[in-house]
Length: 118
Ligand code: SF4
Image (cartoon, rainbow, N blue to C red; front, side, top):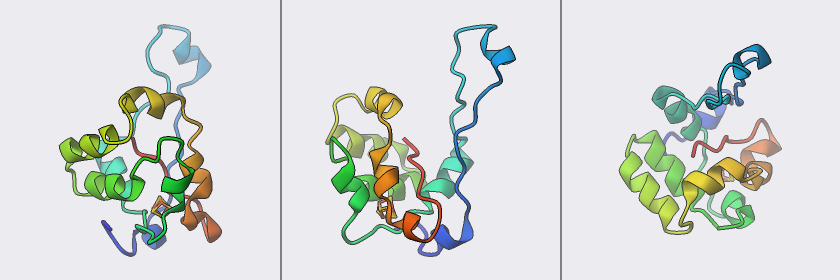
């Protein structure tokens, strides 16, 4: 677990979207990624549950608690290896998945769930 009290200290950041006026100018991404600092904070919200419901709900059973811990520590190389251990194309599945892990996250019992940082 990255930070045991992270889920109590940090608020969830939801996706940001560029305005329509900005989007129509090009075909670029219109949901900006989290900055490294934002990803670290969001990953710190994970409680590393003993029985991680997020992992159970994930269609490809991504090891989300370990991934979050590695993102929190800034070890992105190992984090991507963890994702590749369960999914051949995490860059693709992470974009199209409706984030069932978030719906199952235990933090949602008393607050806003951990955000998928992949
Ligand atoms: S259910 Fe939520 S808090 Fe628990 S390990 Fe998964 S992402 Fe972290």
